[in-house]
Image 1: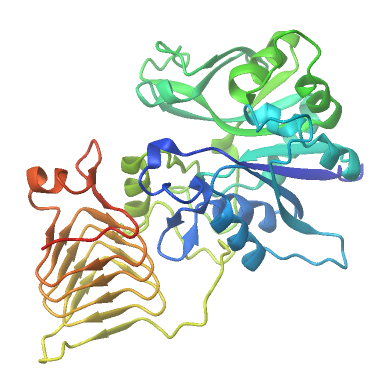
Image 2: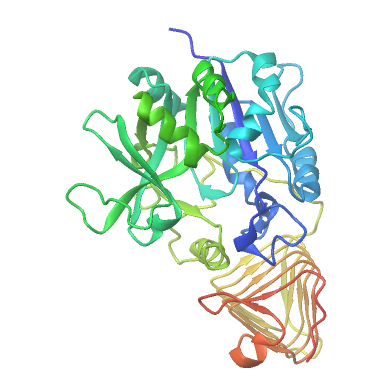
Length: 408
């Protein structure tokens, strides 16, 4: 049997309110991650590696940096009719923006009608993971499902933020609970729930039919409306993400998936990259994560102007960064960052173009692009003082916004 014709739709139009202030002027999928990447690169890389190369990215809020990143980075062969293209909200169905993820697809059904695929993959743009979508498509075709939902076990507390699945022994979804206050746990495991990852594989006609309004109350959201409706029709099945096999991936990484929807989750996923034996390995050249690479010189670690030695441990240093007689531990240093002599950067994430002045002290911070940290500034050591000037997460991570002026 010939491989099905597959179209990929990546949903990248959400506001990302829980990631404020990092999403003050950018869409969540465009937020930098791991020094050199954007969050969306992980989803797109999965499809590029699996050779599903017809991809549309639906955008809406604050999409300029996302549009620019995709246009500069994600270019496939036109000769072979492959593409990654952003599609902004166009009000094709009337003078209104997208009312939800399902409505976004309904308003862009012309993309499906033009491509005429057999299968449509509808995936989120804001998770960190490796996955071979081809295996999920194969599972979908073999099961005869109308829709297949990728799922992973999470703690019951985490499950409050996700759709939770109950399925029978054959994998058919029998109940779907969207962000329930008391989600059902997995059989034989009272501590965990089977959570939807927000990644779906649809038969094309099933998707078209379910998102096309034919009732008084249209279905606008994938998790809240569409999947429960298809569950009632008996055509929704679950795919066990933990069984997905990616080349070059060891057993520790299998099943790794992080929703980086909050500051704390974003920070912790970044810190996963710099563990002594990282649970998510950026150095897997069998399944690389692709991104835009600027023409910058190599990272440099040197003595300071007065001969002070540098110390760097457990950190990622991106191209164009300079550590000059300073102390960096367990931190992610993005491109073109400069850290001056006697500065200490501990357990922190510095985004592109940040300048850390001499003697500054940063601990458990996220510093957004192009911020200048003055000499001898102190951030992350005095919660009461930091709260007067910066955003502080539930777990005490201090976030310095893009363009923020820092006082010593």
